[in-house]
Length: 398
Image (cartoon, rainbow, N blue to C red; front, side, top):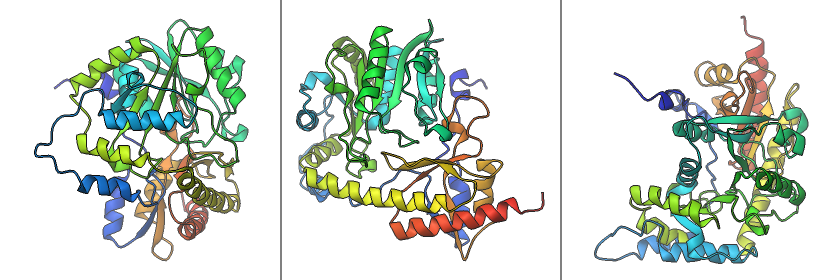
């Protein structure tokens, strides 16, 4: 039997690759600190569940392919608070940010095209790009330089006749890198000058820790034809299971093509969109409290990592991940060993191995992404376990 060459280029998600091995470790009674997936543990706001429980229509109907008006209006109202005036025609409701990315890439990439993405990047970007027949052209960064990339000469060196778009995550997943206003404008300028789309994944917008207010690409004037923004309720409201997001652009021709995808998949879940709309009633105080909790968790993880000899990491400015180089030969082998041969008083941990976050072969082999989505006390213990594990792993008889 023959399979698609495009799907064969794709890899399993590094966040979920070891799920079956972890299940067997659970069955053996191990306590696993799961730092591999960005699943917030803070309570989902009660309004979401209240709206679900109050849904009593006699028939659960399809929603419009472009999204429920109530949800679209809620997103527009949210952006109005950021100083961005949007109408319903500027966005499509999607089944999470992931579908918004799939729509966008399918609308702009052809076989043989390239998209420039700073690496390390969210591995699903590569999967989605491969499925279009295009390829990722990596803009390489390193832990030693804090994974920063917004330098004109470095970005433009990646652009060629095959380039159709630039994609950035701001704040960064997996690096936590946050672009300054000047850096973001530079990326927009480069895209406009080279007549490229720039896809800005902004799902972590509220998670910025150094006091600055993160700029959205939509707040800049003059880039309306270039900018595409990916948004979602998953991280912002600790509602990953809702699978509700938005694809936003003022380029109406682009959105008209994406509507074809929207109609092809019929619609996003009706009830989840209604409940998601209610989340946007939350105020600045909600986000301030959430941000402070994650700032404390970040500081806890960074302190623990910096106590481990040989670890290289930079303090993330946003999102809720740390990308770190560990003093081990291979992060995937180390992860499997953690789940099959190691424990410290019944404790072990999971992370996402760093190799799949890169498009450059051989990069990230000893790097890991860890999500600080657990309580501070659990993160402290997880870093203790990591330190013990690294020492034992490196002292094994080879």
